[in-house]
Image 1 (cartoon, helix red, strand yellow):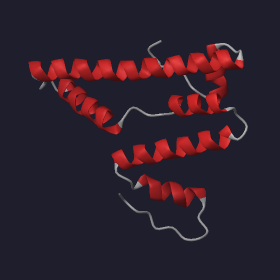
Image 2: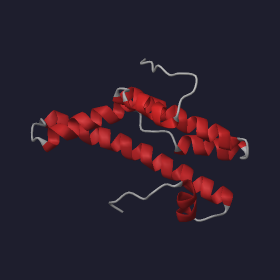
Image 3: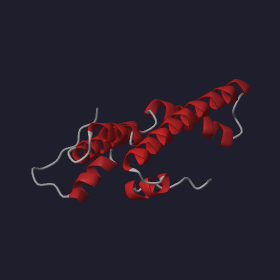
Length: 133
């Protein structure tokens, strides 16, 4: 794990500069931990079920799965993807889609708990719909 040297008084700009130097996989893990921290802080004013749902909603696609997808997608764009790799890419896409579907289900459950529409919940949480929708 990388370390970031910080002084006792650190501006958010300096902290961001330090985080910027992390390798991608560690950056993703750091972001996941920051999101979990935010969810825990919000949990003080939320019930346990809402808190758990927010943690699940903010959970990123596992870094190993994302990096595997990125590699295969890059090969596909370069037209160097073998037939076996194409089949593998389809399996990875299916796993990511399943992960995303579970996230949407958690959003729907949270919207129902809060008695708001899914659109309103996503707006409240700052979640944008994908461009392809």
